[in-house]
Amino acid sequence: MGVKIIKTGRKVPHKKVTNFDLEKILDTTNEWIKDRTGIINRHISTNETSSSLAIEACQELIKDKDINLSEIGLIICATMTPDTLIPTVAANVKKALKIEHSITFDINVACSGFLYAVSVAESMMKNLNIKKGIVVGVDLNSQLVDWKDRGTAIVFGDGAGSVLLSSEKNSDSGILSTFLDNIDDNDNSLILKNISYKTPFNNLENEYEFFKLEMLGPKVMKFAINAINTSILSVIKSSNISLDKIKYIIPHQANQRIIDAAVKNLKIPNEKFYINIDNYANTSAGSIPIALDELNKNNLLKKGDYIILVGFGGGLSFGAILLKW
Image (cartoon, rainbow, N blue to C red):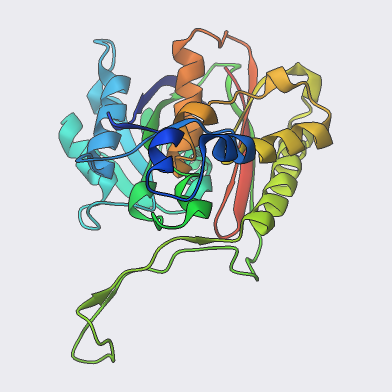
């Protein structure tokens, strides 16, 4: 039995923030941002939450009348910005979609979260004989960054992307190969501490303490380039599918320079890499599924196409999934 993606969806906040908007609040320019990241626009939440974006992205998956909600037995949300810890974002999605019975939970693997969630979903669907499952990646990075730090604030955006997975007994398409790994972040190159609350038993002076995302850009870039190269070559090797047969590579949209360096190292034609970082910036767990949905909705994916999803993130985590559409 194989597991394949049969539908895709996405949702981003309505507010678009341009580089020129950021010029007004940060010591930066449109040209500086564009040159160093490839980013022009990003969508930033005003009143949207991780749950509301995830719900709307997942509603895209079930709007067709041929979808039987009783067959959806699994919902996994990849996020590091849950608006509710209890219930989980996945549980909020289940409730909104009016799915009566389903396994639901969230996972946090930062920007690699969507890949990990799809891999977990594939295994659970096979082991538990689940007909259909939903994976959604969503992050509100605007809540995590320091808006006085141009090194992080310019890079991130908010958004959600989703996929509907189906177990197929006699299909030659679906997930063919997966590679996941994690290496120690000894330099704390990408770190975000959780909120600390004052209790009768600790020494916090204030009621609570907030922390913001901290990133060492050059170290993250070096890791990311190696992570992309290693992940792509690993799924190629384990699947016996040659690199020249790959129609599209959908990378985590973190930085245009990272992707350009990976393209150069792998000697892959630029057109194989699907890039939309210019319009969305880095949406973390939402990055890859948002790009996949764009490809799908623009009718750029054809039956039989080989596609690689590749990502990297905090932890330091990374991986890739090779699938046949």
